[in-house]
Image (cartoon, rainbow, N blue to C red; front, top):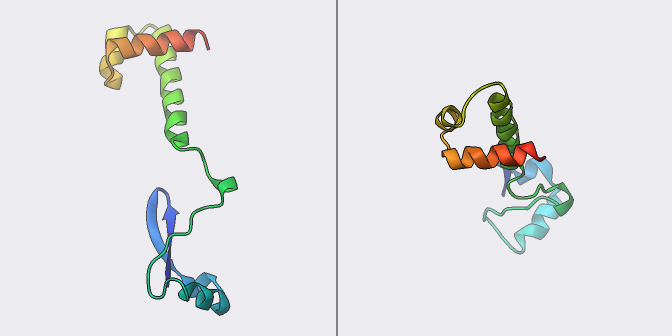
Length: 98
């Protein structure tokens, strides 16, 4: 019996025999004998969907604002970060008032 686990965004499998007592394995086998199953994280350990990317975007937006204050113009920032000029303007406006 194998259990799916995530490692650095990738999924891998662990043998149930390495982490569970035989009694628990036998109980699970009554329901799923010889199949792979996924056991989700406890809800208290879960992060909200997109948490990591939101933090990365906040960091990027702060960097864009700092570069703008240091003298970069909107066209340069749009080119550097592969964004439209409108997106850069929106980021600057939000950063200015946050």
